[in-house]
Structure formats: structure tokens, C-alpha cells
Image 1 (cartoon, rainbow, N blue to C red):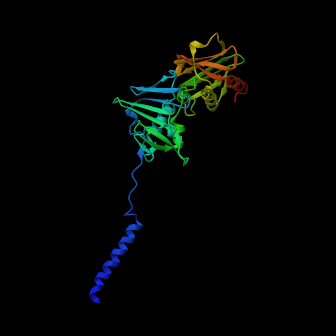
Image 2 (image 1 turned 90 degrees about the horizontal axis):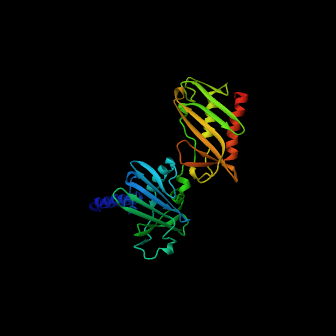
Image 3 (image 1 turned 90 degrees about the vertical axis):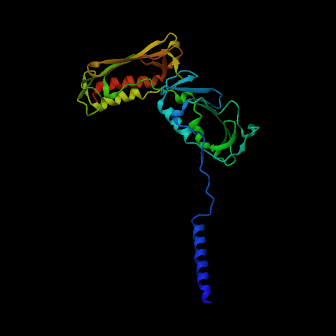
Length: 313
């Protein structure tokens, strides 16, 4: 009996090892790493075009590190949206392959014209991704990659990918560096006011600057607030070419002084059009575009400067 003891002990140890190995998933097949929809870096991408449900394409091109819009118009761009879009498409994970070399993709709700993204790279290659219907699970949609295979991507990624021209357009007409601001002068229909600094310029508390509004002393906080209220105004309309404003009526002029001794000045003009009493079209300095602001927002800014000048607060 004793001669079997070593064998029994060996079997016990081996059995315990097998149980432990199973508990640690040593024998379980590892799931393959999730694939990326796009195997590119931001530096590889030279252009991309997006066609949404409406079939209207928006196309952006990059040259020497600078992006511009070629379709539908050469609107000024919001750089943050471009950066976010490029980051978003690089992070999209592909699900399992549904069908390779598909013959008929219409059964997946994939269109030949809508809900598509085309990407061109600096090596001359082009990649196309067409998105279709939601899977029965409800948490993903079908995607056709380069016409080679149908897979899936999370449904919540589409809202950040299938953007339109308005999403990429910079809709804020007013832009200046508050650290260099030395004055704002508003000349409007119902009120006019002048915010002026003395000292080094800038609206930061740390700057040695004294501010006046229509000659009355005001705090740097108030100067900053008035500047920010103007800069935060955004167009609620599609941008127009400034040359297309037909017989405009002048609504206001905003002169922005920057630097010591008012080294530079920017002049913004606001216009109204016949039949559009609720919109003020703002043309920034040296811009070919007009931004449609709410007339009530413009009046609020105009009145805010006037009222604060009266109270000095």
C-alpha cells in the first residue's frame, strides 16, 4: 500500500493544479482584441467627406496642417469640432464580421448615397464607411467598410460622426484676446457706450489696468463680463456671404482696441435687412461672411453697456 502513496499524492497535486488553472481561466480561449474602424493617425488624413441622411455632403481638406471646408461652402471652421471628430473616428470599435464580400447590402439598410464617410490619406488611399440600420440588439448599427465586409459599430458613435456643415462652422463672429483688450466702443441705434482702459491693458485682475465706462470707473470683472457677453454671441442662421446682403440698413458699429496705446483696432459692423427685423447680420473685420444674430441679443448687449455706464457697476 505504501508504494502507491507517492502516486496518490502526485495525482492529488495534479488535480488541485488543474482546478486552480481552470479558476484562473488558463484554458479559456482569449477573445480577440477589438478592431478599430479606422487604422489611421490624424496626420495620415488629408481630407474627409460626410454625407448624412439628407444626402448633402460636407467636405473638409487639410493642407500644411490647416483645415478648410470645400463643400458646401468655404465657411469659417470651428477647430475644436474638427479635432473632436478626428479623435472620435479613431476610437470607434468594430464588432464581429456579419458578412464578408457582401453582394447585397441593402438588406442591412446601407445606402449607396447617404450616411457615408469618405477619408483620403496622404499616401493616396481612400476609405469609405457606409452606415445602415440598427441591429436587432438595438445597441449597434451595420457598417460597410471599404465595400469589403459588413460589421457593426456602437449606435451611440454615429451622433459624433455624421455631422453636417453647421456643426463644423464657427458661428461666433466676435473674436479677440481679452489679455490685450484696451477698449470697446459701441455705436448703436438706441444706445452708445465706450469701455476704456488705462495701464497695461487686459481684463485680468493681475493687470495694472483701470477701466472706465463712459468716463465712470468700473471694475475689471465688469469689463471682462461685458467683453465675454459680446464674444459669446453666436449665429442662429446659416452664414451668408457679406456681398449678398442686399440694401442693408446699418444697426451698429463695434470698435475693438487692442494693445498699449490702442496699437490695433478691429471694426465689426451690424446690419439689418428688409423683411428680416429679428436678425442682425454681423460682418467681422476682413471677413467675407455675415453672421445672423438675434436682434434681441444685440439689443441686450447694447442696453447692458448703457445701463452699466449709468450705474458704474
